[in-house]
Length: 275
Image 1 (cartoon, rainbow, N blue to C red):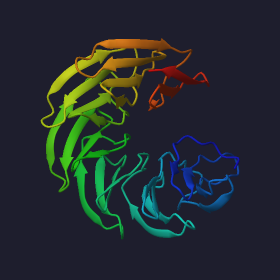
Image 2: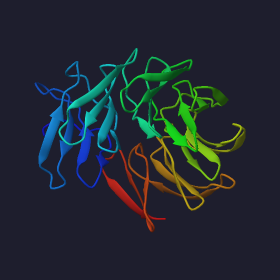
Image 3: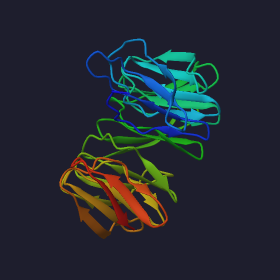
Image 4: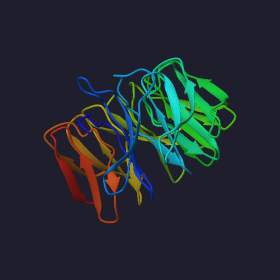
C-alpha cells in the first residue's frame, strides 16, 4: 500500500480496516486487512482521488466510513462489498458513531445525520450553523457534536437539540464524555469542561494554541495543543497536573493505558509518558 494514511484504523478479532489518501496515480481507498498484515479487500469511493479522512467504525460485520465524495458507506467487513451508500450535501470527514442500530455521521453540509444501520435510510438530520468536521460521541442515548464555529450541541435520539454551548473559537475537536462531563477543545486555546446534562460550563483550561481532541481516565483529562504541549488536567477543577513539551504541535488524540499516555506529535515522534 503506497498511499498516505491519516486516520485511525478499526480493529476486530477478524481484521483491520482503514482509509487512505491516494498519491499520484493511486485512487483513494478503504482497505480491509487480515491481522497478519495481508490485504483482504479494497473499496474505492464513487469519486476517486478525494482523500478518505474518516476513521472507519465497525459494528457486527459491517464497516461504516465517510468519504470526501459526500457519501457514508456501509461495507461488508468480510469482503468489502458495498451494502449501502447514503449521500449528504458535502464531504464527510468525520468518523461515524454506531449505537443501537443507528449510524451517526457529520458532514460539511452543516448536518448531523442519523441513518438506519441496516439499510442506510435517513432517520433524521440535525442542522447546525456551520460545517461538522469533528466526530460525534454517543453516551447514554445522547449525541454530542461540535461544529466548525465552535458550538457544542447535545442531541437526543430523535434529532432534537437538548442544549448548546458556544466556545470562543472554531473547533475540529472530538468531544469526549466522562463522569457526566463533556470535554472539548477549541481554536481559542481553551479546553472546556461542560455539564453533560444541561450544557453549563464547569471550567476552562488555557493553553497557547488550538486545542485538539481530549481523552479522559481516572479523573484526569489528557489533551494536546498547537503550542507543542501535552497537558494532564484535573477533571474536577481544571487545574494542571503536568505538561510535556514536544518539538511541534500535539495534534493526535492521546491513547491511555494503565500506566502510560501515548501521543503523536507533528515532530514525527511517538511519545509514551508515565501517567
